[in-house]
Figure: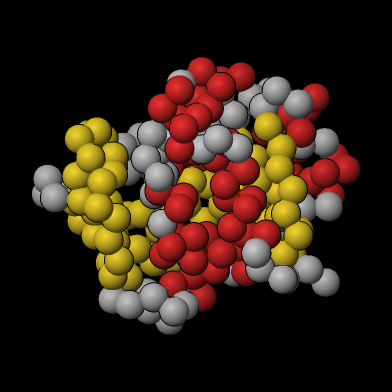
Length: 219
Ligand code: ZN
């Protein structure tokens, strides 16, 4: 009865950008799978864009309770047939966690039905993520807020449908705010969007970021 997690990554930046490979030598998916695997209640596999059917065959999805999605430069290369399949699996009850630049992935836009656009700035400023739903399982064990010292800023307006549950609002040093932790229900499935990420910053080594993703898998 372990939670079966599949971590999906387009896995392109790590192969082409030395700075990214230095931070994530086993890929962003490798790092996420690594910290999740430390939980005895989870069994974790990975899948990437260049595998046949992007590693997301009917069989893999049937054996996945929670799919984590990381993409940035190759959203357009994800086959529509695979997007259809993932969407159906969500509607049938799979959880989907979309990270950072995954806001522009085909699967997220499909499930949201909106443009999912936002504003952004990359100067390594500070982010404070305020917990605005302290009873929610995703923020279990967190304080009133947590901070990440150097991030890429994402700002409003974030073109998403009103979340069923909003759990984080971010403040940035430059003055912007952002709905950085959002939950939706789609069919029998649940979708969580979590903002932190970025391939040139060690965000997925941040202890609280790891805790939120771990909580989200259990939610
Ligand atoms: Zn980014």
